[in-house]
Amino acid sequence: MSALHPRLSSLMDAAPVTAGNYPCLILNADYQPLSYFPLSLWSWQDAVKAVFLDRVDVVDHYEQCVRSPSFEMQMPSVVALRDYVPQNRTPAFTRFNLFLRDGFKCTYCGSPNELTFDHVIPRRLGGKTSWTNIVAACSGCNLKKGGRLPKDARMHPFVAPFQPTMHQLQAQGRRFPPNHLHESWMDYLYWDIELLA
Ligand SMILES: [Zn+2]
Image (cartoon, rainbow, N blue to C red; front, side):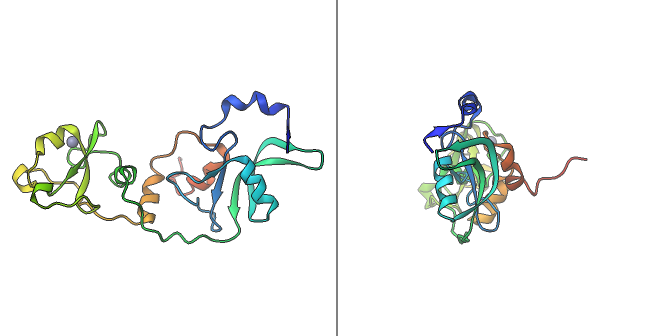
């Protein structure tokens, strides 16, 4: 696969930013994305390799081809793993996942701006840094609440903080699409999106 199709170079500028150019979306054996955050992508080189090793089925492809003296194939844009990878992991307690759980908005006033984290029960009163005590809060609300308990500050989260499941985060993830998407991915990322009349 040393020689690329000549048309390939003219299309480079339209390529997404992750997993190099011509990234390939990886679906689990049930045709759900293997992961939303980060979106499961391989470089086209890895995808082509997996095709040759019979580890994946090609679901969709780019128009561009890879060529060598002995073969030619269209670069895969979506592949599905042949073996199912179990998805019952607990989501990591990360900044991104926490914002995702709370829908990228302040859990006190709903603002999406200047998001920070708030300990619902302040640390000085024994509040833990955990899924069940941290919420997304705008810096204004964070400042206003200060180190007080919700009842003292008269500020209560819209939703009590909770440990989300992977399924819940993935459902949230569909509401916040990544910026760079190839059209052939849409069916697999947004299959449950409401259809427009
Ligand atoms: Zn706020």
